Length: 175
Image 1 (cartoon, one colour):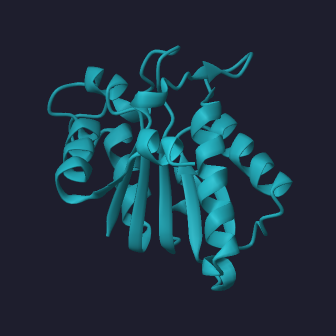
Image 2: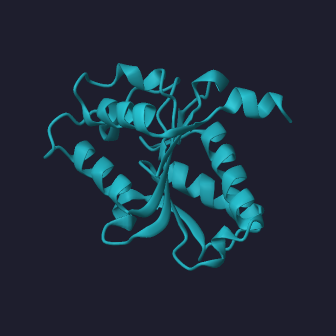
């Protein structure tokens, strides 16, 4: 099962951690915290290996983990990490955060075209770690600048055409 969360309507901003190329996106991190807290309240996280959260950058994974800790989420049930940490490890549900957005140029993770390129391989690992469900967070509008025919554009197209969508504007207005 595939679900996409297109953050474009909320105009997310990405920034680089000082002294590094690692990026973070506060809006995505807060939205992910909200979804994980909701899943926890519904008892979804009771099963071990329930949720993994993968981000292309350690700054984003660290931010998400800090927000989850603040929300009282057990890190043994839902933990954020870079894709390298999830190699060989499956979860019932994977939350995949394509952090890049306005404010930063596309990172290497988003520019893979051929299957053997690192960005392509890392995207494949991120998506393939899910046993049942993938939730993709992305600024779909911003990521249109990724290379045509690249793995990011293929992934976005796949989620747009075959996945269900969480409408952030409608969901926000309803509250």
